[in-house]
Structures are given as structure tokens and as C-alpha cells.
Amino acid sequence: MLLSAQGLYAGICPVNLKCGSWQNPLGIDDPNPRLGWQVVTTNATERAQSQTAYQIQVASSAALLAVNQPDLWDSGKVVSGQPFNVSYAGSPLASVQ
Image 1 (cartoon, rainbow, N blue to C red):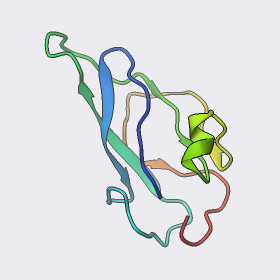
Image 2: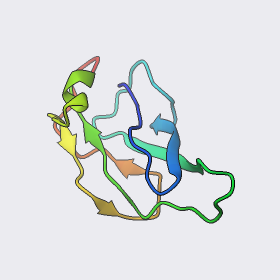
Image 3: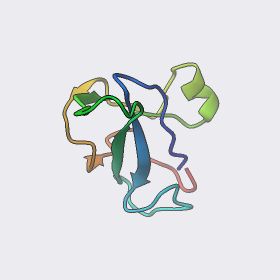
């Protein structure tokens, strides 16, 4: 599973992307892994920046994500300040995917 973050909104950026408890795992055996991340401010002069929503997109290739065509899962916009422990809820993941 390739974990990447795109976009920069409101002065914050997602970092430490995880699947289960691993960053960029080589393999997992959980069909519904838990996804997590942290957010950091990108502007040292701004304080109290926080996440208010997220959207997770999962595709079978980076090329599909690059053209905003997630073929496995799109969570849609989820209003939440909690940047951790989101269960994957997309199409079943194949071995080595």
C-alpha cells in the first residue's frame, strides 16, 4: 500500500501516514486496515491550526489518483477533527495491493 498526502489547506499538512501501525507497509493481512496520520502547521507564525475534515482516496495506481479517479475507495468529505484510526471501507484489497 502506497501512502501519500496531497494538498495543503489552511496552513496544515498531513504527515506520518500510517496503515495499521506501519508507515508504508510492505504487506498487511487485514482487509480493513486502520489508517492514521498527524497534522502539522506549515507556517510557524500561525498557531492553533487544526484539522476540521478529511477525505481519503484509494486507487490501484498513483496515476489514477493523479487524475482524481480513485477506483478502490473515496471516503468523500468527512467532517472530523480526529486524524487517526479511520477504517478502510473500500473495495476488497487484493494480495500485494
